[in-house]
Image 1 (tube, rainbow, N blue to C red):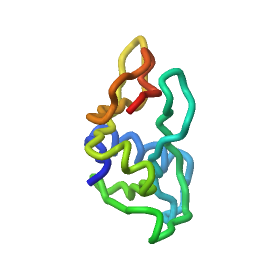
Image 2: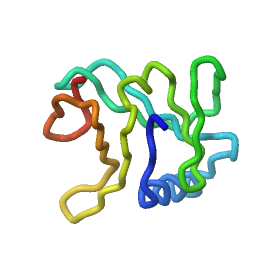
Image 3: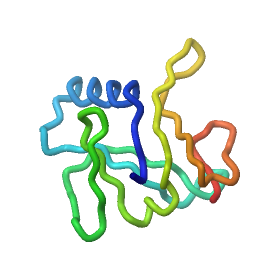
Image 4: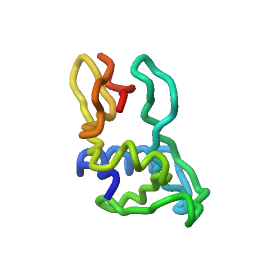
Length: 110
C-alpha cells in the first residue's frame, strides 16, 4: 500500500466528513505537488473523481483513500497521522522516501 492512515487520522477524517456533510461518494485524496521549501508539498483534499488507470483506491479504518500513481512513487510506505496538542494541530506525514523535510513538515525532497 502506498499510503496508510493511522486510526487517529482516520477518525479525524471521518469527523471532518460528518461535520461538512460530505456525500458518501467523496473520498480522501492524498498526493504530492511541486513546491514548498523542500521541493514537494503533501496534498490532502476530498474528491469524487476516480480514474482506474491513474489512481489507486484503499480503505483505511473505514476511510476511502485515493492516491494517484505518480504521487504513489513518492509516498510508498508513508503513514499519515493526526497530531493534536496545545501548540499545534494537524496531519503529519512519516515518509520513508523523504531525504529532507522542512521544519513545518508539509514539504519534503525525495
